[in-house]
Length: 257
Image 1 (cartoon, rainbow, N blue to C red):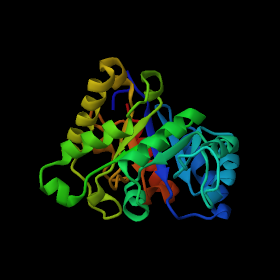
Image 2 (image 1 turned 120 degrees about the vertical axis):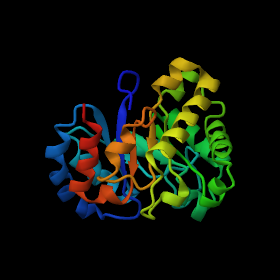
Image 3 (image 1 turned 60 degrees about the horizontal axis):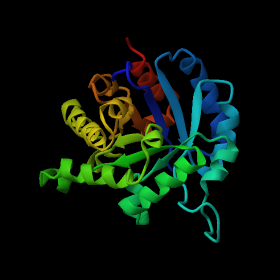
Image 4 (image 1 turned 60 degrees about the vertical axis):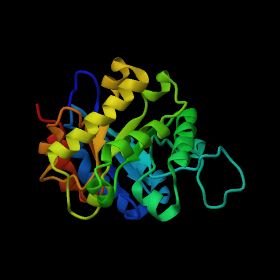
């Protein structure tokens, strides 16, 4: 982490877990811990049906609410989809875009990710853009090339003034939900490479200001080591974000001096 230039963000991704009735009890348990978080921003990215309850439950504390997806179109005949301005109207601040599960199960591509990034920024949302490689791609030695392509495509035609609102989350696909985690050095190397891509696109000042998270099975046990890497500015947390005490431990790791 480098708090001199950029903010640390710990974001929970609930995925398809937690009913609306679960939100308030979770929030009540988490609030006391988060109130002591000086150095990082905390975000809960929840399923669409949970968002109204989450906005209400966290309105009086330092937790922002995010969505897990959005449609690239502003409105129209897209049954079952959610537009960016609908999220803004609810009070949502962040949105996850391009998670590997969306890419794997629902056919999202680098191009559709770029369109969603533009839709989010146009509406005033802060996108958390996910990039990452499979185990086969890592073993082929093309991780950096693949991540470079994903980042460049996601940010295509995004202006310098808007890119400052983008968060990049490096999530190696082989580490998501498997219990496997990239070593701190492996994660730090890729996050450093992501910052280099941004530096080449937008210059050093903007690259220093961009928050880059690690998201491959970060948990309460490995968070401190991962966050000690200079180019890892937070985490996109899956399973551990469903348990208040585990999520709180990660937040505390991000708040150490």
